[in-house]
Amino acid sequence: MKELDSLMKTRGIKFFHQNARGLGGNYGNVAELLQSFPGMHILSLSEMHIEARRNQEDGVYDIPGYSFIGPPRKSGKGGDKRWW
Image (cartoon, rainbow, N blue to C red; front, side):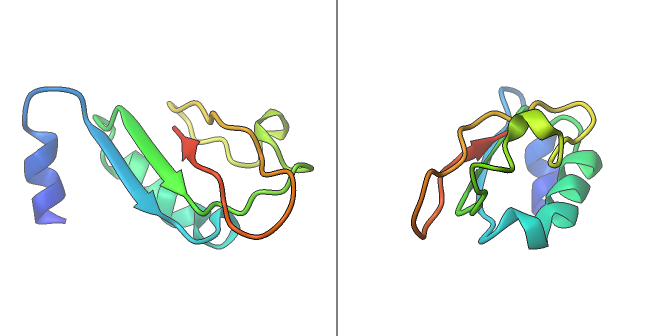
């Protein structure tokens, strides 16, 4: 993660994107990334596969210091984008 360390030291807003291919199985990795690099302003994730019953209001995907924003997918396969 030497490259990410270097990017975090530059000026400006820190906006990153990652295809996580399912937040349920990768939540720990996402949380670790955000906690390891607290200067990250925005992290966009695609392919989260979050069902309507598990939305941002239930707190399942809360990460201290970040706000989870994004509607759950309504049906079908694929994923919607999520932002912290």
